[in-house]
Each structure stands twice: as structure tokens, then as C-alpha cells.
Amino acid sequence: MKSFDKLPKEFQCDEIKPYYDALKKKKLSRFFMRMFDIVLSFFPLIILSLFFIIIAIIIKLTSKGPVFYRQVRVTRYNKDFRIFKFRTMIQDADKKGSLVTTKNDSRITGIGKFLRKTKLDELPQLINVLLGQMTFVGTRPEVRKYVDKYSTEMLATLLMPAGITSSASIKYKDEASLIENATDVDDVYINQILPDKMKYNLEDIKKYNFFREIGLIFKTVL
Image (cartoon, rainbow, N blue to C red; front, side, top):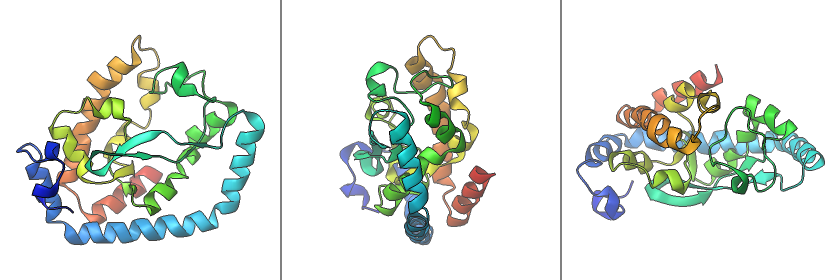
């Protein structure tokens, strides 16, 4: 981790210092988690390469557009990066509706429904994990639009790389159904869902421990 005085200016404040101090003490856990990330992203990418090709072919044959969805998200130290996901929606879906997807969103393709339900659309994020832009357990990466709505304390979740799963992800596994009938999807997400998710994410930082992170992976699978 960077020294506190080398963090981006918006992180150098009293609201974030306790979270920084908690993570700073977990040097071994952070080291082992990074080793875990490298091993468990590199080998599955090789083993699943044929499976990736099959999914890619199905996506190309069933809808127009690229195989991967490369949306800009936010990760450690408030930096932008492009996330890898199999495309599950029609081309240019971001321009045809909210950035939050509802359960029965008409923009989702036929194969996209299956990929989302089985979480197979998330598999390409192994590339982001291998590159160090993401980790297996951590706060799910948000788009800049929503990060700009973070309170100062919420920025503490960006002391670590964005994650594939977390306590909040498990609790909100059916998030799309919660906002399905909302009149203003963005308003419900920003003012109701996001603050509650952040409570879990901030608590995860305080309790950060390698073995606890591994436990969250098993909970996610279950």
C-alpha cells in the first residue's frame, strides 16, 4: 500500500484514516490474497480457454456487437479501468437505458439471460484480476457516475482493488429484482441500495483477513 501522505488528496482525511490503518496492519493477508489472485486467475484462464471460445461464438451468432463488454469502472485509489465481461445485452445498451440493469430488462439478449443467471458473464474478469485491477474479494466496481455520489467515508472502499464478490454482493445477489418496478432506477440505487451495500463493504475492510476472504468466496459459490 502507498503511504498515507502519498494517497490521492481526497483519501487523506480523518474519515478514511481508520480504514487505512486497519488495512496497513494486514500486510501478510494482502500478500497472500494477491498470490491467491494470480494463481486462481492464471490457471483457470488457460483451462477455460476453449469454454471461452464456445461462449464467444454463441454470443456472436445470436446478436450483433462485440463478444466482450468493456465498460469503464473505478478501482483502487479512484482510478478508472475497463472491466472484462461477456456481453449480455444488445449493442450500445448503455445509451438506451439506465446504467443499472433490472431483472426483466428488455436490453438483455437470450444468451445473456443464461450467462447472467449462471454468472458466467463474470468469468472474463479473471483477466482484470490477473492484471491487478481487481481481486476475487472486494467492493464491486461501480461506474464513475455512482462513485461521484460516494460520501468521503465510502471512498475508503477504494483503498483496495475492486472485487468480483463481497458480503454486499452476496446479500444483493438479486439486486435487479429489487429495482425492477422502480419509477427512477438511478434514484433508488443511489439513495437506497448503494448506501446499504457500502455498509457491508466498509465493514469488510475493518474485518479484512485472508481466511475470511476465502470464506466469502465459498459463500458466493454456495
